[in-house]
Image (tube, rainbow, N blue to C red; front, side, top):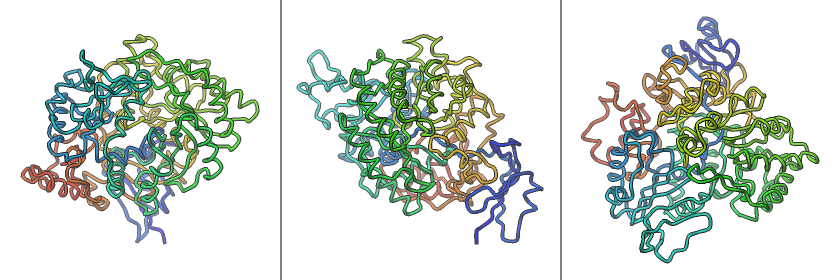
Length: 605
């Protein structure tokens, strides 16, 4: 017999009409009713569990249309996250502390999610500062798609010397004597960055599973209940999917995941997709973990990764032939596909290929789409609409907008990407982050960007016509994203028949000052009617504490996204967070795990 739960006394954004409700009934993991408090409470029975939400705002569970959650989870506990850290002084302090506790042969990894424009100092760390902070422990710091900083210990660990040649598409910066300085430059693509990062030691499978669960709990803290995994470099199928698959079998996933398959072998892409479409069943799995299609890499010759510090790359002449072969196979097998596409010049050539295939094998109904599309033209938007495609947009410009304006000017920047025009043309649009190696995984930073039109550094990129209302932005992050996993009509709303995925926010998204949107969190996150994260007034509902990670792990001491609420510790938290315990790394971590489960934020910042 199913358990009936009533959540009441709230301001519930339903994404339906009427837009706001006060209460809802959950049965068998779905919404069975929504309405006023009086209407819903009349459905209460003797066995109903009733949860008072204390007048808080409730939103449908946030759904990231482009997140590298599988790869990110495997590495989360290895990474020192600078996401949201307010100053360079803070991040250098964190780096120094983490280097001292990191055991041989592990590295300190800072892998994306930050930009120098977020710091009070408005600059990046220097190689000298990184070497001073960590003279002995290898340090790898990734900055967007353009460069990586390695200290002397990391150069020794990866074996880069005066005699190491520059790889194709990348540059090892050297001093006047020809010795590597520690700066790696992506010119014109990021392969040198990612291939160097891949040289670092990994966690064992058990710790990878723990790391993945911690990453999902972190996403739940930020209201995320679903994600579409875009694959990624060095994310091999099926090997790197085994940890997530095993967690799914154990019913330990707290984020619903639809995943795409990303080819890893240049010049063998057609072989990969021919094999996968023949041997793997599309949508295999369930609404918690399922195969979603192909991409975001379809062929390596179509890669137009943006680096606004460098000129736009011209794609190779063989691109059309290679892309057509892959897209034709996918279309014939009726597999959805996605493609990383930054520049309009590249998108023009991609669409030429798609139109050629479409003449023989119609693409409509496939839920195919472009990722990013920052500089797409109106003409190409029309072509996307005719072919029945969609566009998944991410807040990469919130981290790189200053670079784009410096290279191309403020006027072109006003439509990077032209989301308003996409919506006017009826093109499906979903919002997301492209985390974890470029932008941050925090959805509220993305929502802030959509609403304010500003970068994380405060640069106002878009005028009023280029910004979205709060309701519009939320729809893109919920209902909009559901189209991209062919789950539209199933998730993204809080009305009858929808999956019961939602977040109870720490403040009212619809009325707080614009600048405060990026500091929002979830106080209670629910997936399929079950609580996956709880804090604040809902700590008694929290799920069991997660397994303990390695005591030296950066997340054990700093958490993930910088917690702006840390400075306002609640009295309840203060009573359970002892400064004496916090000074001992192993003890503080193990206590911190228990406190997270009880809703304490002391170690989650």
